[in-house]
Length: 98
Length: 137
Image 1 (cartoon, one colour):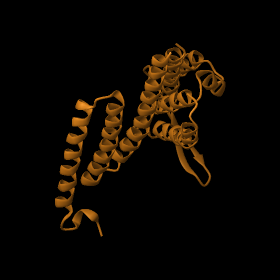
Image 2 (spheres, rainbow over the protein chains, first blue to last red; image 1 turned 30 degrees about the vertical axis):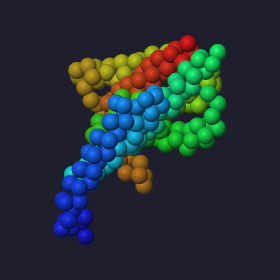
Image 3 (cartoon, rainbow over the protein chains, first blue to last red; image 1 turned 60 degrees about the vertical axis):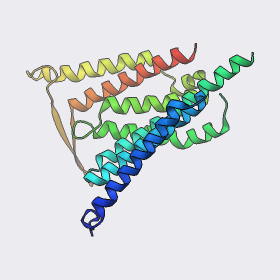
């Protein structure tokens, strides 16, 4: 049976989109307020993970498998950016100790 | 930075990144993908390697100077553009050969693939050049 023909499909998809929107909003508050740089980096990482989720959700909603590849690429690159940020933070802390 | 966690993760992620870049490269022309995106993904993988180890280790891994990669890529793209000119066609127009392989079906090889290969090498070379110069400071 095709998933999109089940009766509650549209309702569930809209509900999950709404939840993801709320998630983005809450994470953006942490990104804006974040007392330290580390908080902001974690918030950015979470936003990237949420974006992966939204893209995958959109792929399900529109039945287009191409978006899944976008989500995969974004997940791999987001990991790289978080690692680069972490190294930058470590290097800066090392400078302060000297 | 010498982090054991990052190095172990890299062992898992780097093959996936490189495989994904090759996948993107071959899917180009007909679908989303191509030499540019494939090259960028491969460059991201090498960037991760340079972060987990050192830039000198990345140089040992690649063995070729990034500038050489860049210029060879440009040359390949130019050759791909010049091949149709020999057959009295416009510069950069597509020429296709179909190779029949037993058990594997037909494979369409053409100058666009060669051109994309050149773009791939140029993007990888440019990314590595920028990366090595920035991280060595």
